[in-house]
Image 1 (tube, rainbow, N blue to C red):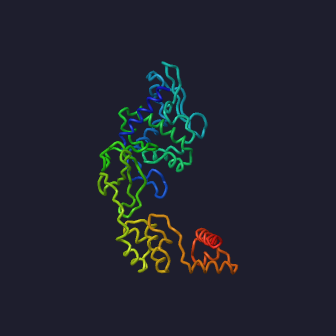
Image 2: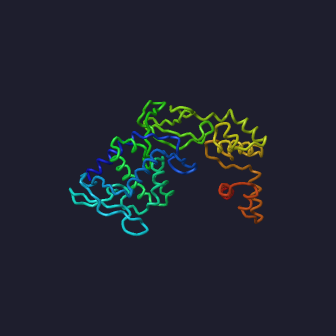
Image 3: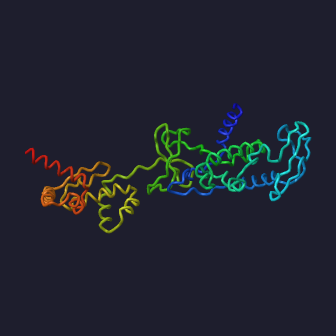
Length: 339
């Protein structure tokens, strides 16, 4: 138990030596996760696996006691004839039998067909859940394979050169990114990608110390504060003019650096004014809309209801929301009955 905890702590400390690209998504939500394979690690693991599966009868050192007094115990046989596919060796010092795959992650592996694809995923900046969906196995099996492979790589190369390329299932560590507001370099965390026009598809960061949001500066690794949104009032005439010219609301909002909801609210206010209604019926940007109808429309609704028309049909014909209209008519009826 203590050995496992020490090894887990060592792996956690080794995570600081890995290189992560913050622009790569961690989850496959709206954008796909690109292929970030390191071919050098894949080729190295493939060569090592070929040596472990070698049919050579030259006895290796004992993996149990590390003794060199070993000899061939049983020759390897092809899989088609049955029996052991790999040769078996015996150690004279500890009297144990072993194969070349003994004490490696590939001993008694039932899904040998997945190992090449697993090697390809080891160096990629992906989560266990995403990689398990690609391989069609449970993520816990993939996590166990990754942990054992990292242990095996450290046995082969104690310096940790090859093990440092493993990024599968490893949380990215932010190093060298300082908050542009408070200067803290240890409190920065990953956030979602920005969908604003001035910083579209760029990774956002948040400082836990001061709450500042920042994005990566284009062409460098320096964080800059996220630019504040422009003031809405000076943009209202341009939004209205471009909408009357037939331009789409989404295009207007993207070019001006404002959200689609704000531009839509402004245009709805202007339509309400053109109909002679209270502009608050369309709602002000950033505030909850207050439903308002002129006395002529309320009288027309009551007249049509007295004629037997359903309120749903009236709201649909006037392009009005049903629930606010129902509450407004109920208030008017309550006023009439109390008066």
